[in-house]
Length: 61
View 1 (cartoon, rainbow, N blue to C red):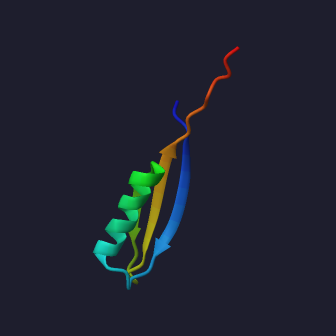
View 2 (view 1 turned 60 degrees about the horizontal axis):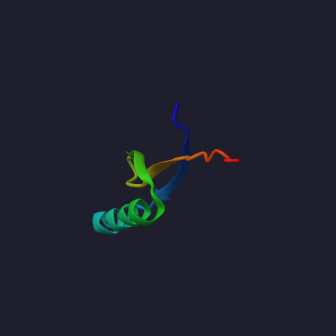
């Protein structure tokens, strides 16, 4: 079963959709993150969960 590392952060309601898209794109391209969940609250804030797979390296002899 795959193991994932999670990162969570909030985006304020004043951020534009384009700015949020750029932020998520940078995390995906340079950090290897993928969008796990995005939740938008009634007050306009967004909570974002990103995940990336943990790659375990086996020691060779």
